[in-house]
Length: 481
Image 1 (tube, one colour):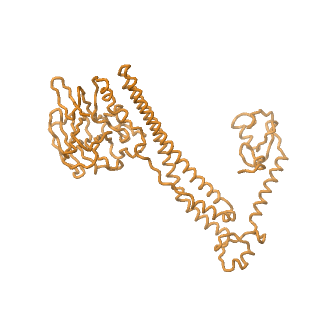
Image 2: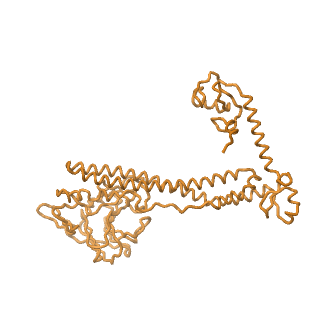
Image 3: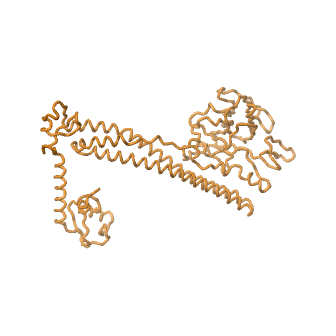
């Protein structure tokens, strides 16, 4: 911290000791160059402190202030010089004792206290110590870079949480606007749940960012203080070397930062099957989607529809957080709900999409990189169908006519995953495997033609199987929920 006398002799603009000080009529003083540069930049002749306009193009020099500054600098130089003298012999400390790791004068060197010790010139000793200290800063600098990167990821995640919350609010409102006034209480209940989750997850991310900021500040302080010592004169540097090195050694290295799963807004919980859940109270006709795609798992190149039931490749990559749940290699996404028992079916409208994959993905598989080892899937590409699994790199699937829709049927208990054409009731392929992990519906496409999860028309109740009513073309679904 600057002394009181040093503060009195500091220019308000550059914060350094006055150089060629001038004084305005308002009694405020500045370095001549600082004042002229300020006036040129601001295009005004106001005082930088009190804003009072000066009538003089060049204020007079303050000889008294300049004398005080020169006296202060001379006193500082004399004090610094006195620190370089031996406290025992008042001789210059011009030799470094390697065994005792301290500066000594020539008298100390020749005395009995340092009889058989090794000595180095001050500049050589300082260079060796600087190299050692520089090396010790390497892991600190690497950690600081990692902490800055992690903080940047957290900042992006925190911003995305806000975007998700705003988008979810908008979509909820659009859904409720289609309903009547008596749905206000239902709408408010969902809005409260969303706000609570947003506040909780934003608070958690704020705490994470705060912790990273504190760790960054601690590392930055240590590095900054050490670098200041490295810039000091050799003798001064060697005098303080042990304390500086000890500070570096004592600086704890934080654990590698990482984003925890579940940091993002659970959009699927708020938007998934929204109208179906409302229907349970309203008893009106609503649509129900058996699969809701989880946007927190979607590859940045995959665009999901607002109701989270349709996916297509986008024209440009979205800026999304690289959270642990997100798939980053294949242009794909998984459903928000997984299955580890029972039988489950869903249909996907593929239309004219010429490049897609449908199937299931295991819960335990890591979402980063290649995920083939956890996928059972039917792929259509280049006009051909293939069945692929962790144990099969590709078997041809014969299809007489390309279906417009594909039904995926998972019987977890029986260990079967089947694909068929629901329009012609034609079987396409069946995987047989003893499943042990939770399975999530999986969709992937590198086409701009969307894949659409077919909504079910709900009448009285729900069952897992569905049938086509030839008279009206609707699918009755009963579901024992």
